Amino acid sequence: MLTGTTADVGLIAASDGLIMLLGHGPWLVFTFCLGASVGSFVNVIVYRLPLGMSLSVPPSRCSACGGKLRFFRENLPVLGWVLLRGRCRFCGVRISPVYPLVELAMGLLFVGLYILLFMAEPGGWQWDVGGRWWAQQGFALGWPGYVALASLLAALWSMTVIDAKTFLIPIQIPVFVSITAMLLWTLQGLIARDIGNVWPIPATAWPATLAALLGLGGVLVSWALLATGRLRPSFADYEDYVPEGETLGDYPHARREMGVELLFLVPCLVGMGLGWWLGSTISGVPPVWLQALGASVLGYLVGGAVVWAVRILGTLGFGREAMGMGDVHLLAAVGAVTGWFLPLLAFFLAPFLGLAWAGIAGALQRVDGRRRELPYGPHLAIAVVAIFLCRGLVLDGWALLVPQISPPSRTLAMPESESDAPSGWTLAPEHGPMPYARDGDRAAMQTPGRRLNRWL
Ligand SMILES: [Zn+2]
Image (cartoon, rainbow, N blue to C red; front, top):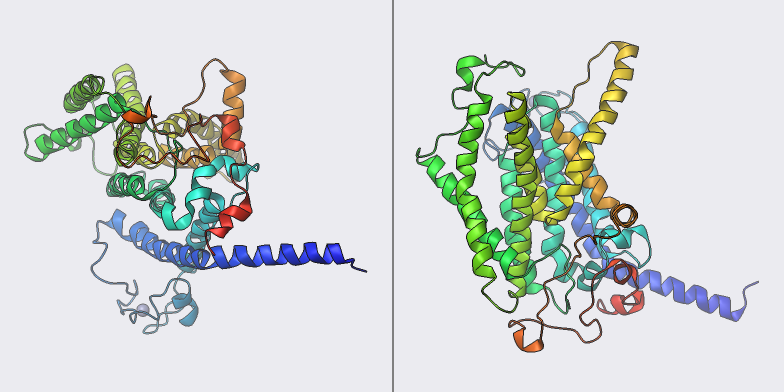
């Protein structure tokens, strides 16, 4: 029999659950629909990009007879396929169930990311992935950061599938993600409220911020020189030596081509040096939106640089192309979304995944005789997701291995005194300036009840 108190507790728990559902329910439905629609676009990208087709023209149609899908009803993700019972309305050809399954999976992935970031409770492993900042902002104020991460997930998925099929990464995907991430983080810097010094990705003071921005300026200068023919692309005469379709051909001038790529990088390096020097002459810290943009751009440059450096050194050392430019763009896009630290960790984890895969593929080959080769991109993508999800484990491992060096904290650069604070700087008194170290990170800064009140 229930006593009065347990009934009360039950009632309170039920009403808490209801409040939770009322607050998050609409966003959960919204993120699922968003994810399913993105999944539908992912299907188009994975099918059309490797064939060099346009993404918007022609509109969705049957690949067998060319019959157009009736707008809206049959174009709906997941539901469209169910309504058609998996067959083309015109010719009756079976439509692969992979399409609705990808849409369903992407919808669930977007919902999963929402739960991870916005519904995490202090103390669990989820709290280490997202944490205080996301819980405080909620979806209403934290959506730009969420959209940046979600689009990275969708892009990693697309790039992995295309790379595994064709051994090529279409660079439009990572370049698109990088540009949108920089814009979204800037917007996030403008709309986030009461953040204290906590920021979801590591941000920096004036020197690194200006080094990143002028470094990006240098990259744009090189792109312009490349587009106007004043810089030549590397491996421009590749086809003269390696027949099309051959992946492991002997190209004799790989070392020479690294000189061309180093030349491309000169404006970027000059820009970074100049930015650092300029930044160290400015006192105070950049406004929040500029730190947010700088953090994203710095991540873009560091992510790209670590792969490119290994590409140049490896090619100079072995005399044949090491690591593709697709991988450079992939990790640069990861950095633009997650900041500069995660790409470094992922880059060092990926080779171990590659070794593990080689072992598994070798064992399977002995069973059925099939060769299973995977390019490097999928290993990078899996390493990125693993590092993102296991942030708590990574920090524990870090503290064990290199206790002398603390990993970069997910904070903004703080003004040394209140008078140095830039305009728009809001130091919420209840959070105050505090180092975003491990313990502060995990501490329960807000009770769940208070957080939910925001929705009422
Ligand atoms: Zn058809």
